[in-house]
Structures are given as structure tokens and as C-alpha cells.
Length: 142
Image 1 (tube, rainbow, N blue to C red):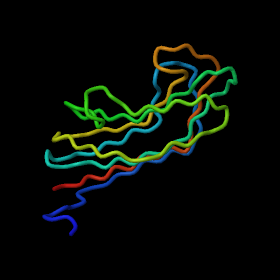
Image 2 (cartoon, rainbow, N blue to C red):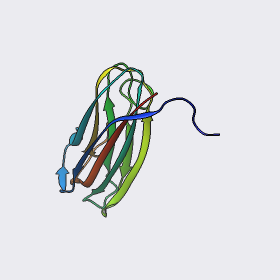
Image 3 (cartoon, rainbow, N blue to C red):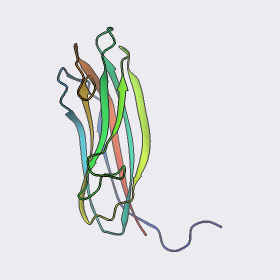
């Protein structure tokens, strides 16, 4: 039982930002960015955590995003796809989890936590806020 063959943790990086930032634009603003140089046989485990809220109470939104710009494919399986989390709460809501990037890209992979006011293509008022963001990326070779 258990894994067979060699599995190694080749490298790991962490980025943390506890400060609060706001954005009144529907364009995504970067909160954290973290890069790792990988081999084509590497897989990258991405752990993310952040808190978002919207300042208004009239059903407008804040969208938090985890993205990976890594060459041919993104970490969720296709080019330009992201993990988006949308909240209309005017109190902070935490989002955290992990995803495994299984692409066979050799070179620098960059992962980001971003946020925008409103939803993609939607209207927005007030401000969106983000705080307590963390990215941990671990390169695993097989």
C-alpha cells in the first residue's frame, strides 16, 4: 500500500500579506505573487488563503482570484482559467484551499492572489477589500 517510486519535495516558497487593501475598480489588482522554477516532471501544490469583503450593502460584490500564469496551461486545466470566489458580504469571508498544478511546464511558474470590485463584466459601487493573504507553493518531482 502507499506510493511507489521516488517522490521528492524539490522546493517550496511562501508569501504572506496581512495588510488590508481596497479596490474600487472592476480590474483585478494583485495582492500577492509568488514564483517557482520547475522541471517538466514537477507538479506544484498551491495552498491559498485570503479574506474578502464588499463595503456596500446594496448587493454588490468583491471577487477574489487565485491564478497561475505558467505557460501553455493554467493550474485549473486550461489557458486563462482561474479560481474565482465572489462575496457580497460587508464583513470578511475567508477562502482557503489547495489545488495541484499537474502541467508539464519547465521553467518559471507564477501564482497570484488578486481581487476586483464587482464581478467579471458586472457593475460595481463602493470598495472591495482583501486582507490576510497567503500563498504556499511546493514543487514535487516524480
